[in-house]
Image 1 (cartoon, protein in one colour):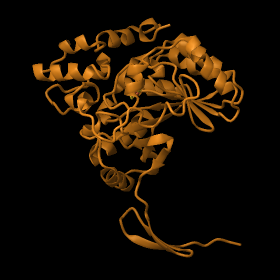
Image 2 (spheres, helix red, strand yellow; image 1 turned 90 degrees about the vertical axis):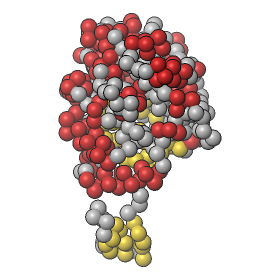
Image 3 (cartoon, helix red, strand yellow; image 1 turned 60 degrees about the horizontal axis):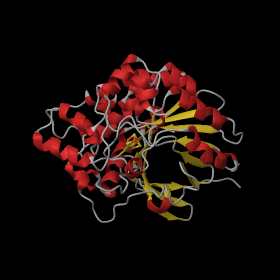
Image 4 (cartoon, helix red, strand yellow; image 1 turned 120 degrees about the vertical axis):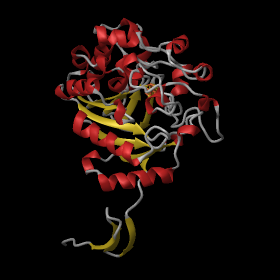
Amino acid sequence: MTDLKDATRSPDWQDDVRQGVRHVRDLDRLPLSPAERAAAQAAAAHHKVRAPKAYLDLIDWNDPADPIRAQVIPSLGELVETEGELGDPIADHAFSPEPRLTHRHADRVLLFPTYQCAVYCRFCFRKESLTSIGRGYTREALEPALAYIADHPEIREVILTGGDPLSLPDNALAEIVARIEAIPHVRLLRIHTRVPVALPSRISSGLVEALQGRLMVTVVTHFNHAREITDATEVACRTMRQAGFVLLNQSVLLKGVNDSIEVLEELCRELMYRLGVKPYYLHHGDLARGMAHRRTTIAQGQALVEALRARLSGICNPVYVLDLPEGGGKVPLGSCPIEGRDGESWRIRGLDGAVRDYTEVVGE
Ligand code: SF4
């Protein structure tokens, strides 16, 4: 079974894929200078290139620093490897007891039904797995991972990630969901996807039905810039909300894409107010190879989230996290507002920057 090309699709969906970039040779159709095209071709040899038309249409080709372009058009910066960068930044492989499965934390697993995506993001921290494994879904390939989940009653959440699970056909998704639902100790199905951002026409009633069933479904989208929020993404998110899915968003902090307070503020507000998607995590850039040109410092990230905290309501504020190497997990990086403590008396910095005393009052 293959991915995108075999799915039952609306014409929009099919057209978006067909008219987008699917191969290196399709870069010839983009309005790139000869030097930019040569750079893109060179970088695409290391990390695949793919972008649906709907996403490419968001690019302002007159702006070489366009934030949408920076996310999908390969560039020479990707070929520069910097000391300290890693092929498997969060140790997916070290915590993989079976193919297509990562079990890092007791109550949840990552399941990789496919190593293919509707869009290949230049900053992807799994790009080396996508290249080296690269395979789509087959029933047989997932059997050992499903047997492992069934044998481990401590697993409550299954996270379909990738590769992009929503790049699969409806019948494949329905089959995978049915297998997971048959494991009684699994309570929650989580789906990590860029499809609602890059290929929103794919979010059809058929896709939603394929995911519905016994399990609570949480879809974690991946918007990085407010320019990715369009009428089409609004329809896609409304379709998923109306199906009863919980919608969260994780963004990656990317230099030249969203490393300004104005861009992040607009992104978080539009996610919550227009799409009904809760900003969940803002990831510090992982140590993926060839990504130094897109990484900020942690101090820069902390300053940005401190400013965000002062401007946005709690529901619009994401948590700034670093996914530690060696499987250390996601740790919050936001600066600590506690300035000091003397017994039950604390000195705590408020949103206005002023430090106040707070004395705990707790009954016996
Ligand atoms: S869709 Fe996700 S897995 Fe695929 S390239 Fe983008 S970030 Fe990586």
